[in-house]
Amino acid sequence: MQKIETNGYTGFMSKKEKFPYDLPLGTAVDFADGKFMLVVKDDEWNDEQLSLAKAFNVHFCYTADLGIFVLEGGPIDSSDFYFNIQDCDEKDVLLNAENLTVEVYLVDEENNICLKKSLTLNKEMSHAIQEMLRQQSQVSFMPDEFDVNVQGIQSAYEPFELNKFSKAEFVVK
Image (cartoon, rainbow, N blue to C red; front, side):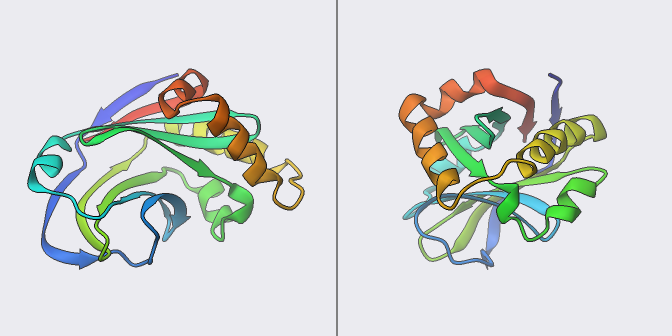
């Protein structure tokens, strides 16, 4: 596993920009508009919390046919994001991209983007993630089986414990 660090810091959003998708409070992951979006939506993000968000460690883990991003850093202790390529509208774009981009968003309850950070992964890191997702795309999930598998992993592991299944690790600053 290779670890990379880069400075894709976008920082605090001075002008309140709306997140383009309405999500419930909590976490969400998607690959849309040619990039992974890891979103943490909370009631509000205060200045102290945002000032702590200097860097996020991200692990892409793969176990039990599940692709899982684990996000840690700043005001986030450890959060897990479960990705299913079979539900991805841009599956072909994702699997054929030369370099994948990952964006981390902290969004408030009114859907304002309070913080956004972005990182474009190198080819090697992108390829490692794509290979795991190609494997996942070959798995035949029965209806609701993916959700049952997610519940099983969440029952067995705290998010930070999933890092032992890490296939790629990077830092978004």
